[in-house]
Length: 481
Ligand code: NBP
Image (tube, rainbow, N blue to C red; front, top):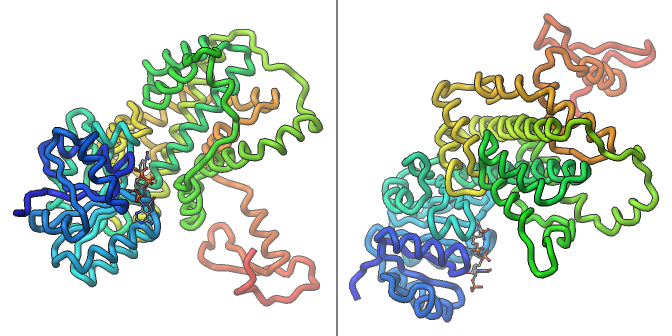
């Protein structure tokens, strides 16, 4: 049989199957393969019936069916499954062929695989794929990075199958090595943050006695304003959803799961020393939710302020909640972009921040009108050092900050946890503070550990003080605190 497939796709679970059908719709011939080979036939006889999709019975068979240079995309479980397939594929491929990993791989794994495959003359791409099942089928957001020479080879396929926003593809080359998977990881972290903020707004509304219908109406309204986004829209639908026992939401156990990419973002933030506090709180909130039994026990023993949430003007307060959510969201994205900027510096990636906002603008879970505003901010100033300093976002916070403070302060007084809304406000206040109390911190470090400090006006010169008169004059170089 002559080679006729444009690309092979390995991994026939939800993402792989849907991406294959999407590629097929866009005129590409795909060769499907899976570790459990029976699934290939099942797929061809069911979901892919009547399409141009072809199947392979082995990796060798799959490779034989591919046009040159060969392109093989993996959509398998992240981790050792990716390494196993790469190991099996390399002897079957030729120099210049491309392997693409579209799973949720850790960006450092992708960087390592890039190095290993460079030595074997195989081109490697680690691509973020966002949008879940629906996105994979009808247009995901794609974030490819790795070996730049691979991009022209895969660009026609990737930019055909991806989502489009304002007629532009939600897919652009991100950068070398693990850049694509890093950006996808930050995207997932931001998704954690967005979801947590919405949950906090819901919790406050619930405490104020709103019914689910009333909450849904509020989210409906927000979805026609600056918060217009996929997550606000699905929250409205979830609040409205009823089965034969009534509203489903209240019957769902309040313990959140996680698959790790939010945690990876928080870990990367700590490693790069960037205060990505909101995503961190969103991850910890899921951890706290998982302590259900402990919380149930503690709820019977620990007291709160003993007041009921109450406001004089409900519509006005609901508007405050909207502004609080919006301002905190601006901080969250500002923090996410700060992290990408720092990682880019460290890894020599030339990230296009406006392009990243556009990639997230459609197809993915965090798609929103807001991302269009971020894209515009970076178009106005590609060198923008922080989103908070862009005129559009500066104005939005000026307009909303009083509301934000009202919501956080009242939630604290009412004993309602708002970790994401409040950490964002503390970050905002910290970021705009010329003089933080770190002078005292430096003095404490020098007092107990001789860690030295700089004097204002003499930056770069580190001095030590013998604070008690009994310590020595030698400063520390090893003990870290
Ligand atoms: P899964 O993550 O559930 O993976 C299923 C696929 O991995 C099957 O093809 C399975 O083969 C294969 N596989 C497994 Br499991 N262990 C393997 C091993 N040790 N060696 C070789 N193959 C192995 O599928 P998915 O939900 O479609 O996700 C695919 C990738 O896309 C993942 O990295 C995921 O994190 C990422 N992703 C998922 C979503 C989503 O919404 N689901 C969104 C964005 C990204 P088998 O059939 O033989 O068991």
